[in-house]
Length: 337
Image (tube, rainbow, N blue to C red; front, side, top):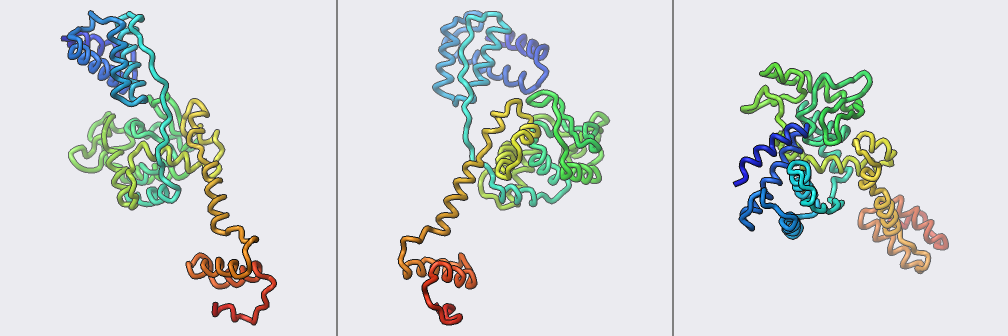
């Protein structure tokens, strides 16, 4: 019943929005809305009332998560306000919620990096970890946009518009190494595209937007690294940012490389206070306060650490001398304890 208006809306999106993902998502969500409208109220778009859009908002809030509803309801506002020119149909959109997701530890991130075997895999992991690239940005990488002399990689049509990042020495090394093994593109229009498929039916072709190529390789490398948790491309960027904070990297440096418009977005990944708390408790629980214990209890705690393999014999002896300075020792007889 709404095919004609959807076709016109798609034409409108093509004229007004440069990014394909924006057009695709707006169209998809409006199509779902019009299907819901017909199914639940047996109405077409021209019979819309403010009550209908409010009812759809209530339906979305009840059935979908908040962050998903941000894009879903913004699409409806775009349709009714910008396209139909009926601003009275607009609905309020909930604010995005920050979701805390477990990230890879420093050790896991290094295992992931080191598990890359081929020049292509090394390029992917280095651009993910050092360059903080999103998976959607890999198909847009071009050889000509790499300015290795000035260490700049220019990025076109990204989530935050046209932008650039700093090429780290590791990225330059991975880039140059990959070019030596990069397959020859089959199509002339792909000659400047950086990543060319190296096997299968897409051999010699550049990556398409929306391709699962980066996801497949990410999972393959993570499995080889022996990482048990679920690893996917969008996990690498927050993991690398969190790791940079834990290494005490200046937040402004992280913000620049991550291309965050606001420093508040970058600071979401700052868990250094958590690391300090962990270090504090690990320290005091590894070396408990034993001042209030008698000599026997002090010696027993230190002996337990020796038997558990937490300290070696020399450390044990030195510790006994410090903890129990009043005990008279007989040479190295303490070794028999």
